[in-house]
Structure formats: C-alpha cells, structure tokens
Length: 371
Image (cartoon, rainbow, N blue to C red; front, side, top):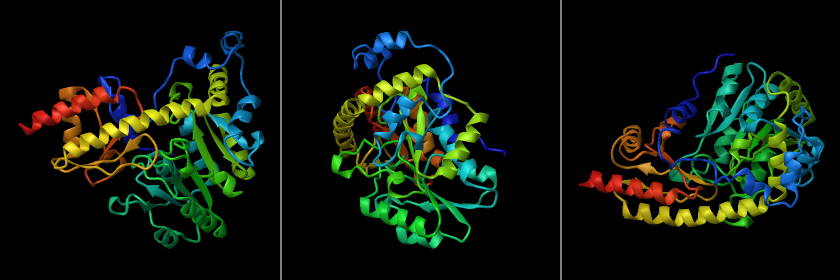
C-alpha cells in the first residue's frame, strides 16, 4: 500500500519542538515517572525491580485487567494492547476491511481514520459535521450514505478537533443502525473521561454492540503520551483475532516499563483524569474571556468535552495567521486545513498548565496586529 504524507504529523515535526508554546496540543498535562509512582506505595521499588523481558503480545494480563474496568461487560481477554492509538487504527483497518469495501467516516477527523482505508483500496465517504449545526453530524444523512458494501463506520466522540460530544440517544441509534446493516462501528474514544459533566459520559460502543470496537489510549485523558500505550476493547472475536495476528508484523508486544506504568496510572485513573478536567475547566474560562475580547477576529463555539476546540478566524487566511504567530511569538496553533477543512478554522488545545502563558503571547500578537 502507498500512503500520502500525514499532514498534521508533518506539521508537528516542523514546529512542535521549535516553539515555546504549544497552544494546540490534543493531550492533557503530563507528569513525571516519579510523580506517577508516588501515587502508589511500593510502586517505585517494583518498577526498579522490573525485568526488561518481552511482554505478552496482547498486553500483560494485569494491564488488561485494569483496562477492562473502564468498560461494563468487557473482560481482559477482549482487550488488545497496542503501541498508542495509531497502531490500533492501522491494524483495525487491515483486519476489518478488504480492498473494495466501503467505509464511512465522521469528518473532520484525524487523517489515519480514513487514509489507511484508502491505502487498502477502499472507497471512503465523509459523514460531514458542520459548524452551523454545532458540529453535530446528522443521522439522517448517515442513513443515506450506507451502501450494500458498507463494512465500517468510524466515529469519534468526544471529537477531535471540534470538541463536539454525542448524546446517548444519538450513539444508541447509530450503533443500532450499524448492527441492522451488519456494519462494524469503530469508535475512537480517546477523550472519554474528559466530559465537562460526568452525566454526559457515554457508555463505550463496545458495550452497546457485539460488533463494535472501542479505541482507548493513555495519551489524552491521562496525559501520558510518552508511554505509547493504547488498546482496543471489543466482543468482536473475528476482528480482535485478526488484529492480534497482524500485530506480529508491527510491534509484536509493548514495552514492559510502559505497561507497568500504564497499569499504575489506570489504578489511579480517576484521580489523574479529575485533575485534568479541573485544569480544562479553568483554562476554558480563560479562553471564553479571550474570545469575548476579540469578537471581530474569531468565532468561538465552546466545546462540549475534551481538551480541544475549533474556532474560526474571521480575518485573513488561517495558514498564514498560524505561520506568522509561530514566527512572531513562538506560539503554535493548528490550521484546520490539516483536517482538509476549508472554513478557516484552527485547533486550540487547553489541557495543559502553560495555557495562560501561550494565551498571553497570542493576546500580544492580536494587540500588535490591531495597531
């Protein structure tokens, strides 16, 4: 297969470690190994005594046991651990699709959620979310997109990059629609746990359908991107077995230290996530005030969940704006064109402690531009 350059990741490769302020990060505040181990008495000693052997290809039994606690009715044997979310996406596409199969994907979205399927030779149809509808994709439109050869529907909620979050009724209807048509739902749930109201937290798709596959990762809600630990949960034995077999050609197994640390983090996952939700809430208040001060420059739609949003620039070209901001103030925003968006939007992230500093630099940039 031939894949085009990953536009978003190439953009980060150019800028991420060259600027002082990442104001577009999609993950939450991270922590040191020392701080993580301090959450659990004795964890530091056990970590130092860990033998650096191969791990089980499906993930260590104790790690899978902790992961399955995130889901109702899913056992550790229905969890498959991967090197981050990206490997899981790649392997799912190859396990669930054959050349010529039709796939539907909620757009805008992370590029690999459609590009890998295209690389396999699958026609891909966009289920487009629109700002004027609050970024809520229309289920009636989804029904019209389903074809006899549709095999997979890709969804993402809480949503990257808009911050939209489905309601429980919409999710249940979507899963029922897919089941009725023999379609597998792949549900990107990497921001699950970052809802602004706990009552908005959805059940995982894998608990609603025996066909559905749920994607999780340590990077976003827990801010532990450096562990490179992700997973899928599913009762779909055919897909899970094929993914496990394909994994023998990619990472084979995960890093033993990463699995150990991920397990510790998940045992204290609600504490970590609660801290990040509080940080998101305080940072959102700063963003509300900032955008209120600049109504002629930006259109701000407050996100419903997660650590990112997708404002619209009202003056000028968004790519040029982001480039000039990076050069003048060493602040990185992500132009929406990297999501194939033509509406002059950009991604802003607010899950990290240094948002006030980055936002102050953005404020100075806007003040200078207005003179």
